[in-house]
Image (cartoon, rainbow, N blue to C red; front, side, top):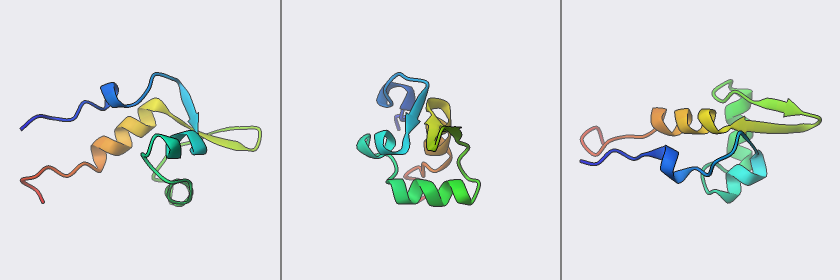
Length: 71
């Protein structure tokens, strides 16, 4: 079975605000805020906006990917 390479899927960039992450169809803004409040996602706050790093997104996806054999 082929492993997903999230480096190829997620666009290049250092930080993405929550709306950008939602536009990428990774995590909706409301869900991202819940994950942040539960300390499941690490954020960078710039002014009043929250940003996720590309690596945090990749790590989150890897951690939450369930293989066919596990499901």
